Amino acid sequence: MSTLKVDNVSKQYGEVTALDQVSFEVEDEFAVLLGESGAGKSTLLRCINGLTDPTAGDIYLDGETISGSQTDVGMIFQQHNLVDGVSAYLNALTGSLNRVSMVESVLQWQSREDKLRSLEALETVGLLEEGHQRVSQMSGGQQQRVGIARALVQDPRLLLADEPVASLDPSSAETVMGYLWKAADEHDVTALVSLHQVNIAAHFGDRFIGLRDGQKLFDVRRDELTPALIDDLYGNVETVGLAEQKKTVEDLIADDPDDSDEEPMTETQRGIEA
Amino acid sequence: MSTSRSTRESLAVYLGYGDAGDSSVEQKLQDMKRRKTRRRLWTLVGLVLTGSLFYASLLVIKFNLAELVGQVDQFYEALLEYFPPTTYLGVPFVDVGAYLRFIVEENLILTIEGGQIVWGAMFVTMAVAFAGTVLGLPLALFFGVMSSERVVPYPFNFVFRGTMSLIRAIPGLVWFLILIPLAGVTPFTGALAIMVDTTGYLGRLFTDELEEIEDGPIEGIRSTGASRSQIVSFGMLSQVFRQFIAWIAFDLEHNVRAAIGLGIIGAGGLGLELYIQRQTFNYTEMMACIILIFLLAASVELASQRVRSALRDDDDVEQSGIVEAFANAPKNILASTMGRRER
Image 1 (cartoon, rainbow over the protein chains, first blue to last red):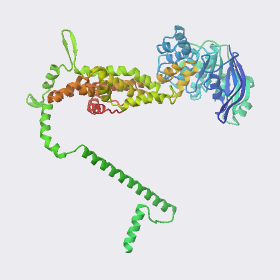
Image 2 (image 1 turned 180 degrees about the horizontal axis):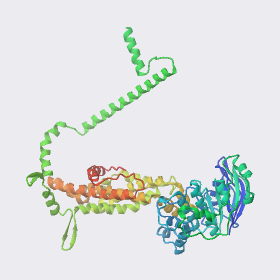
Image 3 (image 1 turned 180 degrees about the vertical axis):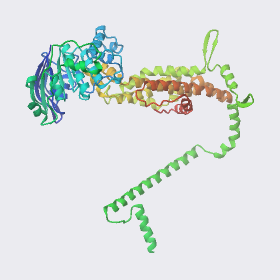
Image 4 (image 1 turned 30 degrees about the vertical axis):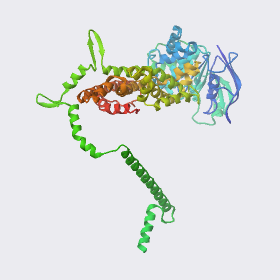
């Protein structure tokens, strides 16, 4: 249960305005940021995560101002940003760095709970069996799932993802998004995800925030997202359309051939219909 | 009269300074020829300069071909002592037994006396190199990391960078001479010299490796709310951990060769033994030392290369076999003793 409030946030890079007085509030939802490259999606996420500071405006999480990177906000990057040379488990465990001292973390003296939490997070993203594998030996989709696990280990109240599936093939993209959705749902956290693929966005999102040239263009719920809005956001691009949404998220995860031998997913009360 | 003028003109055209036509293509051709002429002139200047420097150097070292020819007989005699001939079952061959006798007599490898292991010169050399490397490692790590601009902001990182440059400017042999008042002409001082040398060189290799890391994992760790020192160790050092191990193996290899050089000026071990035998003109015994040096350096190099190629993700370390490792050993020993390093 958490509320993210973005209040009049602006960001200038020299002469360039990346964000122009953006405001919105998201509460216990799976929100999607849409917009062209350069519209300010990444900048907004980096501001919320504290990787950059906004020039003006405030960001609140459950009513408290947040600044700087913190364990309450988990971030998933397009390029994974994992430590390649070590195992998926150790990468997930880095999500707990905030809770241990430097020496303890170097010697891997994290608490038993944190270690179990890391493995549980890997289980959530369907990678428990592969936990010992080096990240560099994993596929792009698996690496991204390790990224989700790391964010989960932080035990965040807010989950951010910056184009988490932009460099993946459609099938892996669907799987990763499915796990991301499941992670947010199971851990009951608010999620804000920027996406390029409108059909994926429409499939998973509850809320849709459109950014154009650093300004908020629309902020709508699922039933209000119309092709006209999308046209407005991207200009008349022929190949962008709203795909048919027939399957549920659970079906998507279960359909993935890589994960077919996994235990059945826990029942979630969610079914997405067209 | 007209012929000589036309010759002169065609020569001018050839060099690119003639009048060769009006079209832009012909003009460009002349331009290209002019450039070529200038390039040739610079090459000529370079050759003349190199030639005169070479001649001056020969004068300084009093190079004398006649002396070489005059000494050939003496060198041949020395060769007979280096490689004493004998016959095995009527086949002429080098007297390996002579080497072995000396190696055992002088305890160059090791002996066991009354249940106690007595380490020979070869292990003294190895110990100087190993102890020096291990002592220098934490210092190299400290200086290497602190020199990185991502850890210590510019210009403060130059304090550490500068210290390492200073260390490297002075060859390891000279560090030994400097440190003699501290611990005498002993293997201990040898290890200290190698420690200092390792700080400068290995630290520099660490810094170079740290320059090439990616920002992604650093941001990834930062986003979890980790502390600054955790960002350095998990975001940065974890990216280069394997490369660091590989460089340490490489440095140990280098230090074994350096320890032999240090031995010659007094740090004990095989180097010292070699020096004593040369001073007393015991050429066969001297060659026995060289053979052991060869075996030691080549074995360490072989082991180090195995470690490195096993560690590297990319195959940029050559997979050198036993034969190559032994064939490269003399060249590498020479390079290290002269204070040169190849990456």
